[in-house]
Amino acid sequence: MANSIVLIGMPGAGKSTLGVMLAKESARDFIDTDVLIQVREGKTLQDILDESDYLNLRAIEEQTLLTVDLSHHVIATGGSAVYSEKGMTHLKSLGPVVFLNCSLAELRRRIHNFDTRGIARRADQSFEALFEERNILYRRHATVVIDCDNKSQETIVAEILAQT
Image: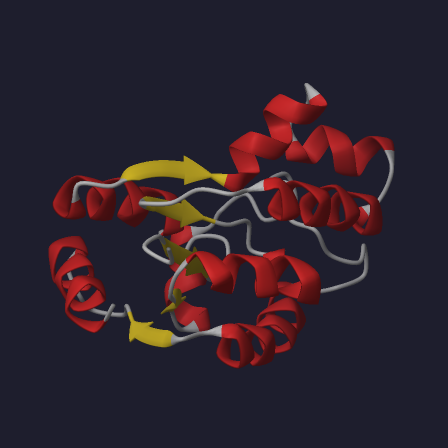
């Protein structure tokens, strides 16, 4: 039964913060796939990147996404989850996929640790290039798109509940 809500979006879009709020409002449990990866690997995302590379982190992320089989949850994904077709197909089977859409300017305002945050990207890839690349994927995989700029967290949660 597809009764979970899956959140996708850029780092800094609010997936984890809004996910907890959404879980409380909808009487669902909450899980963050980045935390699942860290627990599984016994390392932070940045440690994984430092010890290998972004492609290894994405492979670990895909394996983790494919093991998530949760009903009645709010699932906050890592920003790079959308690179995995298999992972996203699986997540879509659990419930609607909500893209938390923030502008580049808003994300820049929120993120100050781009280089140490554990973001799966090429070493030479700027935040702008990553934003452009991922935005296409987020829109392709989204069931629902929620524009988040200039809105309170409560308003965003209410919009998600109204559209899922």
